[in-house]
Structure formats: C-alpha cells, structure tokens
View 1 (cartoon, rainbow, N blue to C red):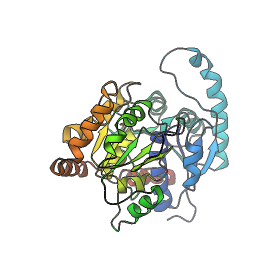
View 2: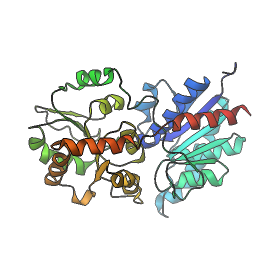
View 3: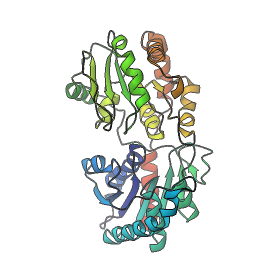
View 4: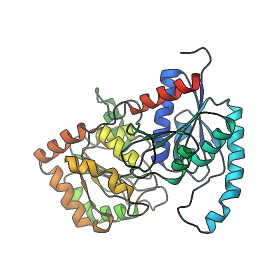
Length: 357
C-alpha cells in the first residue's frame, strides 16, 4: 500500500442498481489499496440513505438525467449539464481525485465530463444488458469501458457485475441469525423475500397482497414494499418493510427471491446462489428481461412478464418451487454456478493501477 492513498470518486446515483456496484468497487478500493473514496449524489436519489451508512463521504451535485428522446427536459439539459459539471469539477479538485468510476445514473454524465476536462482518468461500468446514454457518452469521451454482459452496445471488456465483498457468504450462520432477529423471522418455515427494488413495485405489491393468505399458510414472507408506497398490514408470518437495508442478511435467510430483474439485483441474488422468480420491469428498453434470461435458461430462475403477474400466478410459481424439494435443489445448484466472482476486486485493481501511473 502506498504511503499516499489514492483518491477515487465514484459516480452512480439515483437507484440502488447504480449505487451498489459503485460502492462495491469503492469498498474494494479501500480494503485493497487504502483509497480515499468519495461518492457523488443528488437529493433525488437513494444515495442519501445508502452511502453515508457505508462510511463513504457523499457530495451532492445537480442531477442530470439524460433523456432518451427530444422533449421539454432535453431543452433544459445544456443548462443542467453546465451547472452540474461545474459542481463536479469543484468536488474532484477538492478531494484531489486521481480517478473517477461511474456506473450510470443521474450523476454519471457530469462526472465523466468533469474528469475529461481535468485530465483525470475515468472508468465506465455498464451493468445492464443494454447500455444507457450516460455510459455511452462516457466511453465516447475516452473513458475505459467495462460491461456486465456481451452485446450492451457500449465498447468495453466484459467482466460481470461487482457485488459487495462477502455478499452471499454466511459460513457461521451469523448473518441469518441477525436477520431473523431484526425482522422477527422464525427458522422453521421456508422464507420468501419479495422486493420491487429500491423504489418498490406496484404490480408485485398488488400480486402479493392477493397471494399472502395462501403463502403464509406454509411460508414466511419478508416484503420490501418501497418507501413511496403505503405500508401493508402486518399479519402472522409476514414482515413488511419499506426498504431492505441489510441485503446480506436478507439473502442469508431467503430460500426464494421474488423481485425485479435489475442488473444489480440479479447479480446479488445469483452471487448468493438463490433461486428466484423475476418479474422484469416492463418499461425502458427491455434490458431487465435480458438481465435474467441467462439464469432462466440455466434453470436457476423463473421469469414472469409483468402483464401476466397475478396472485394466482405468483402462488402457482412459488409453490412449484418450494413445495418440491427436488426442484428447489436443482435451481440452487444452477444458481450456485452463476455467481459474480471477484469482479469488484478486478475493477478496483485496474482503477488503482491507472491512478498510480
């Protein structure tokens, strides 16, 4: 470890799907290279809750969502970009940044532009099956690109998705024990963890509301319903929470996940070796269906199109897995073969090497 620590700014704001992979690499930079890590964020994202809890310095800038088509927001874009890049340059200079690492989202484009203007090396990770506009811009500006999957439409080496060090590992059972105590879960019933992502998902919430009486007869359910949604009524064998702030614990107690198939969610679930029922977000450019397709093809997961999700379909798919031990074991074996590996460490080492040259 060098006497003078490197300074790296991570830029992945808005949703947990952008924040978590950036923090995973940030944690490896701190552990492996003693780096000073600073995160960029905006008031409209979840980073205000997630980043400080990980002990990372958070600096707020003006958000710059890059619109996919010409509309009123597109006309305001140049002014937002100018303001946000100016703010980002000030942060990079204040922390004497040696490198920038971005994962997309509202803070990525100004981070890439500011790094380019200051001559600071920067790295771009695309976690989705189809690349977003901000990350494509970053690579065009000269950023070094990394992809989670082949065929994203963004140039760059395919490495996979970084997940937090130790996520999915619980050799002594301490994570599961702590999670059961935290969420008042027993150890005698199979556990279903249901989440619609960091913002919640109305269609998943609605389907679960209609299925909960049936499912709680034989299983227990931990349900992250989303901070912006109404809190469901509590009942026996059902624990509703607005957001899962201990994903490592949730993965340790889960026997089955029911969730969206954002890139980070898929990576975390597969890193934990868990079977899953994925309900891809029906909007955007269709990348969520692609994110989980390989796991479905491998037999590690089931995919339900959002338009086909209903209480009856959810009950049928859950029971097809949890009521059949052979099916559950087969899916676990397939999921174990699809782990995220050491992607965070690999990217951290690349960044550190560049920063020291």
